[in-house]
Image (tube, rainbow, N blue to C red; front, top):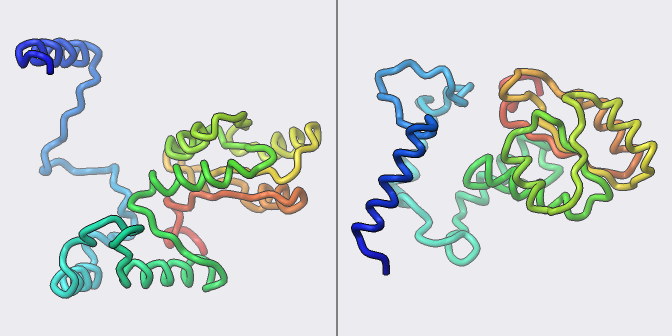
Length: 207
């Protein structure tokens, strides 16, 4: 084990280097007005959500006490996933809830992408989708933002079957909408899969 003084010296040097590069992040005080929240629907302060949360905590406690796979598959998890399924697909499919949007995108992109004949990703996709595709360690065609015609032409040239197109529905950084009908038309004709990150549009814009 290294000497404590050496470790402290190393960490101090590292911190100084990060500060010089303006890479040290400091949490802002809570008194500031936040314009970066993802809580579009105001659910974090919704009276009904708060009431249900209090009741669930009193009845079931504060945690699953173990991983879901081994011992934490609580009935509330299953109820939530059935509710998500009814909301997103009118019960025609199944729901799977992850601990965060990042983990969801990381898993979906890497798992589905492993079976795709070709992979296409919008140039402005969220980092979590990009990271998920990187896990595949295979070629990913990054197409110009929203340019469905580029994707169509590229597929016509390569002749790849069963492609996977990955996009956000509402892009969180630019506010642009993806051309979902056109992208769906491409994968429908090719027997492929369209993966949509709908995090910023769900229940906020349209159906």
